[in-house]
Image (tube, one colour):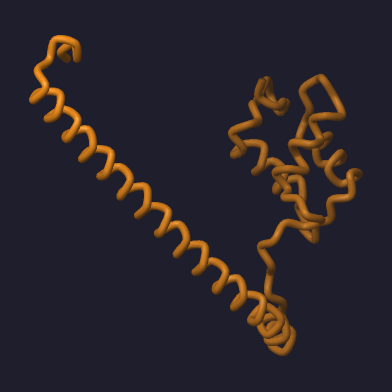
Length: 142
């Protein structure tokens, strides 16, 4: 790119016009993105309202049908993944799935699973923040 000190006034004006057009295009893109975000937030609020209305009805329907509707909300305000990650704070050494399961349960996490350790193992193998360091031993990534 030419040194502005060596450019003619016409070249400087063309360059300035070009840069103003580019800036205007970027501002339109940002404005469009912000508008889309506002629309998505409004739609999310609508859907959350509908979910709040329908959830009790679905629960009641599940009871009437002899079953229950499973909620995907994390229990006790935290997910199993978070509870497993917190279990590693109790030890500086790598932990086994059984030790992690025990720590999660003792921290107050509740589950109705008949095979809770299998759920914990699933988290251990899928969570990108947890690494396997030996046969059946895991730790948090550094």
